[in-house]
Amino acid sequence: MTSAADAYSLPPLPYAYDALEPVISAQIMTLHHQKHHQTYVTNLNAALAAHRTASATNDVPAIISLQQKIKFNGGGHINHSLFWRNLAPPGQAETDLVTAAPELKDAIVSRWGSVDAFLEKFKLALLGIQGSGWGWLVMKDAVDSTNNGKRLEIVSTKDQDPPFIDGQVPLFGVDMWEHAYYLQYLNNKAGYVNEIWKVINWKVAGERYVGGIEKEITFKL
Amino acid sequence: MAMSLLRTSAARRAMMSTRSSPAVFARGKATLPDLDYDFGALEPYISGQIMELHYTKHHQTYVNSYNTAIEKFESTSDVRAKVELQSLINFHGGGHLNHSLFWKNLAPRKAGGGELLDSKSPLTKAIQGKYGSYDQLIGAINTQLAAIQGSGWTWLVKDSNSGDLEIINKANQDPVTGPYIPLVGIDAWEHAYYLQYKNVKADYFKAIWNVVNWKEAEKRFLA
Ligand SMILES: [Fe+2]
Ligand SMILES: [Fe+2]
Image (cartoon, rainbow over all chains, first blue to last red; front, side):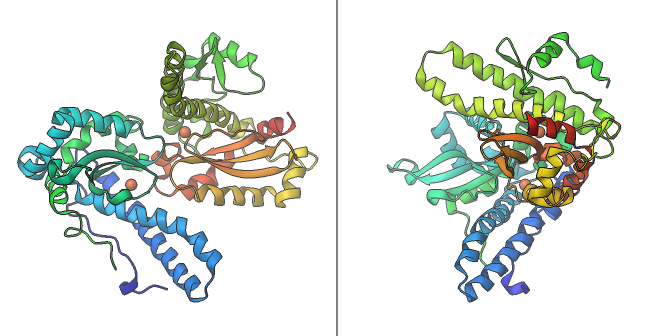
């Protein structure tokens, strides 16, 4: 039994369910947020509660068997929380990379040659995901001091693995689970991958580039 | 959406010549196998729209991408390029094999879908011996299906060494490999149910047993 203080809760969307239309339908957003994300939160809380019980009795096999559940559902909660905030209604100022995140734009151009070249790379990475997963733009510590010691990378993660490996900072993520697009795009995954750019919140991505995610979002109870 | 539109004599001939596996490869190329029923024939358990997209788009894409990868593999003499193609060949080749087995695993009600085999059947005896009953077997498979994190399949298999039944999960399009022989596979990718069942995948897992072709499972069990 968990009380509000020791349980995670579904974060509200920073916009209305229909705000991302026509790129992502209100039906997808509603199910994705209220059902899918809620299920990760519910299952994460259940796994953490079971973990507390197992800890109290030093039940090591139970603790071990809970780790994958915590990783999967905790990852699902983290990934979707990052995702909702790195999207914005099409046409809003936040979706314009050049004006909303000039510093990040320069870093993208210096890393990939041009914004278009970056987009092509990112789309290929998204379409190359086998099964369920996510594509991310992340910032890593660079080995040299170019770009203030930061290096951008496109990475993909499988299922609900979170994007924090090796100290990576996720700037934005794209959910490539079929539930993220199927009701609208059906098997046309490439259509979703082409359209999603109209709703990327570059302002948030740029803020994460400059200051990390801690100021914007917390996963602490 | 009559199936006859999709029937080609080449696909039919290839089908006849591959007895051990329903996956069709004609002249070294993968081709989409024939469906034994219409897209709408599994309704209301699986909608005609899902079946049509699943077969004509998803399975076709695995077939096409497998052929493209194999062509690349054969046209290069660079071992590094060949090694890099493994993941694509496994994924799309696995997708082709899995879906070819899956279509045969299903049958409309009027063609025996969902009909359990009688008590004299060797498969029934094996199921009762290991799981107690068909219901208990189905419950065990549905538990495995619900536990899949991401995309994948659950299979009822026969261990060809011991002859025992087992339930195994496979991620993404990883095919069932030796010593296991696939008897019944359930596709737990979201594309297999989402248009009809949305996030309530447990309802899909319950419903699909109404159209499982147990005769086909027994054929594979005895093969
Ligand atoms: Fe999702
Ligand atoms: Fe499938």
